[in-house]
Length: 161
Ligand SMILES: CC(C)(COP(=O)(O)OP(=O)(O)OC[C@H]1O[C@@H](n2cnc3c(N)ncnc32)[C@H](O)[C@@H]1OP(=O)(O)O)[C@@H](O)C(=O)NCCC(=O)NCCS
Image 1 (tube, rainbow, N blue to C red):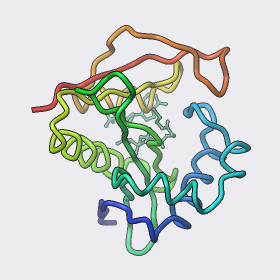
Image 2: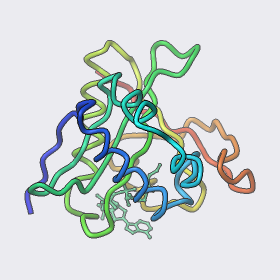
Image 3: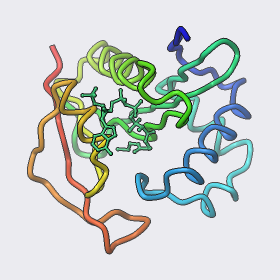
């Protein structure tokens, strides 16, 4: 089924909440945050996340099947970091994931960023493969996954045109 990628507006905060909580419940191994932490978020938190205009939804018909967002890390002005990447298991392999990454890549480039980075957890080979296929390479920078410090994660990066 055809996948549409679109920027999410602040009025879609309930949709963001639903999709993000589904993501955190379904793939806790992949994210720095946790379901418990974000279950406590209120309307203001979700609207705040959308206010920057840096969150994309992937839709099949009316159904949101994927999410990706990005932000500027403090002290790394020339970069943007891709975060919250998730595709519903039923929509994996559908093109939603590369569509979301391409949308974020274009938006970050349009802001003047020179590279797009992301962290991928050790063992998350499906995500790693997707990113490598799209041109991301390991930078060698490693840290602990904030939600489970026993797991490591590695920064990947791709240059933007
Ligand atoms: C990561 C994610 C967004 C990728 O979306 P997707 O629809 O699965 O991605 P695609 O199918 O387009 O690409 C995945 C690639 O990994 C391959 N793959 C599938 N299962 C795999 C596995 N267990 N190990 C290694 N590679 C695997 C696929 O075949 C595909 O490669 P190919 O195109 O060369 O055949 C999705 O799997 C997801 O939401 N995972 C849970 C959350 C997550 O990990 N987010 C990323 C945080 S960094």
